[in-house]
Length: 327
Image (cartoon, rainbow, N blue to C red; front, side, top):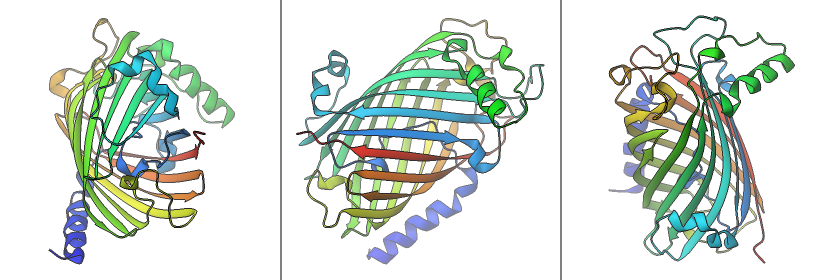
């Protein structure tokens, strides 16, 4: 099949499924977010105000640091990975907030999403095989879901500073419970045309007290790309600029932000397993600009319902990162 036929086939697949797609919380392991450096700092901010809404997945904040010497940390010994020729180790901190479709009521909205807050520390490894054009990543999350994560106070502070309505209903959020999750992902580049186009497929899964699921994905990068499978080799120019479209399907077995924690089943509002949508499709599209050590991204995400009484949702986000010299 010629290059044009490949591109046309995949774009048709993406666009014909756009109305059934769902985005997910912050994940920096996908191929379109790869940084060709073993040391970097990255900050991500996601919010549904980019889509003029204030519901469901309402905010996500993530900061992570990768350095070569982090392979010496004790926690990294728990991260399984193949011994590919390039390996990146890092740690991070993530905060996610979730609300129902309205934050103006003090009553429980019984057929709606529960309020939930999650605070997680993470350790991760991303291994790249530049010979066979494949990547494997593992992430271990440890933290808490519930009042102690502080989403109520954060949302009230933001709304106050922006002169928005005072949020109501956080007293009904998912109760405090511990959070531990183990996530693995694999992707392989199937097609590449110079520095201008690439097609990657992959899959993975997550097991733990926050999310348990399986997923598949397809990612297209187009533009002037600093290819993720080139390793740390010098890019022909000090800049790159490309767009991406990524789509996939998630098969959900458990979601604590909807169903409550494992140990505490006394949360004032949760959804039953029968109310959860068992499979969710995803799409995310964005642009990334890099100049020397600075990398910027803007993206939008579209989603279908996570629960049977829910509605489609969308949000957006910004990301900035800087490479750090390992010398």
